[in-house]
Amino acid sequence: MSNILGISAGFHDAALSVVSPDGEILYAGHSERYSKKKNDAQLDRDMIHHVLKTYEPSHFAFYERPWMHNWQQLRSGQRQFGPWRTKSVVEASLGLKVDGNVDFSSYQHHLSHAAAGFQTSSFDWSAVVVIDAIGEMDTISIYRAWYDREGVAQYERLWRQSYPHSIGLFYSAVTERVGLKPMEDEYILMGMAGWGNQTPATELANSMEHMYLQDFGGDPVFKENLHIGMNSMCFARHNDMDIAAGAQLFTERLIQRVMQKARELTKCPNLVYMGGVALNCVANSKLDMWDRIWIMPNPGDAGSSLGAAALRYGKRLNWQNAYLGTDIPGEYPVENIIQELKTRKIVGVANGRAEFGPRALGNRSLLADPRGDAIKDRVNEIKRRQKFRPFAPMIMEEHVHGYFDMPANMPTSPYMQAVAPVKDPRSFPAITHIDGTARVQTVATDCGSGVRQLLEQWYAETGCPMLLNTSLNIKGEPMVNDRADADRFAKHYGVNVFS
Image (cartoon, rainbow, N blue to C red):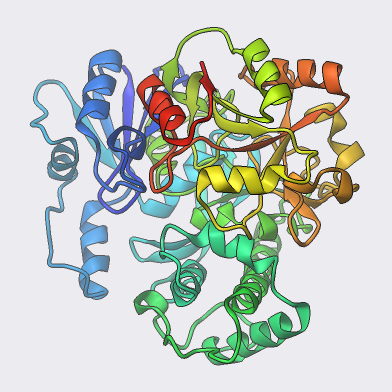
């Protein structure tokens, strides 16, 4: 077997991944970073050319079954029936005719999610839970996963829920209800929820449960199809912040029910959690029925490009870190960043391989001193974003428990997948959300990025082991990909970006 190309394309957030014959992840990247179109559903020409020329794959693995995806779209009234053969869909996605000694395969959508998680985890066996808006016809899946004697990953699906009953579609419907963009701004809704008042939020969550669920207290079976959104007059007497808080609380309750079912069905203490809903780090922090949790840093559809390649490979992948995309070569500019932080307090960095996933982890980041009272407003002004949205801290891993109360089963959070109360919020106002929490990124000595050396030197010079970290992107665009993007950012916002 030679290199395997995993493909996710056609719906949203298209991506490509490449896995070698010995399980190395050679590349994983988002199309949007090349095209500059957020959540681009189509594969960018330059990306395709780079990947095919550099890695020369001879097997193409597609992240879902085309015929089933077409059936789902027909059922939901989205479009007419289209190409259903894997080879035809792959060629349409790549925009070229694939000739020669090339094999094609496709896999069930939720199974690709599951494999992207389980085959990058350290677990030998695990419960796997997938929750998203819709994948083909499934919206929730529970698997038991393990490796057989030959080291081949095995998956047994124990329970599923099908369209139109969907936790993800509910959350997207509320996203649209409060004036945000569904299938894109759900993370903003999560940030809004922290501003809601507890009493009306609880009342709203209870109302949502009675209004939308068929079986109060049972499986999340909805009374209506929320794929088309919800009435704009729903909850009209409440403000958007309280609606967001109510929706977040209701969603957490639903996720808890699914997780409890998974725990009972699998009898396993380990959880692999995937699907777009797994990006809800507030809910993730409350999954206390599990001893250990792994959420691959790209749990949505883009990450399933890696899942498809993993399924074709069959065995555990050699997961090291999330720095798998476009490379900006050179030594990490620690000294330049430190000096800029000391003088201007805010600085950009674009160095090394781009992060695979929606969150900047130090290689395509806007960094700031988290201690100043005015820093948060300054960064919000640069980013041109709503002032209610929180910023994340990145912190040296060994210092995290001195500053944050981390969840017991997620004592570290290298990919910003959990929120934790800030122990001294007055000292770090720039990274503390209105509810006293922060979405933490822990940075280990072997993290794979020069950002660790930056934090070490910053700590040595200031006594502060953390920095504010947010994505380096021009408003309305995806994260910076290459040096040309970094230069555009610097010119647009007047912020130095070092490589």
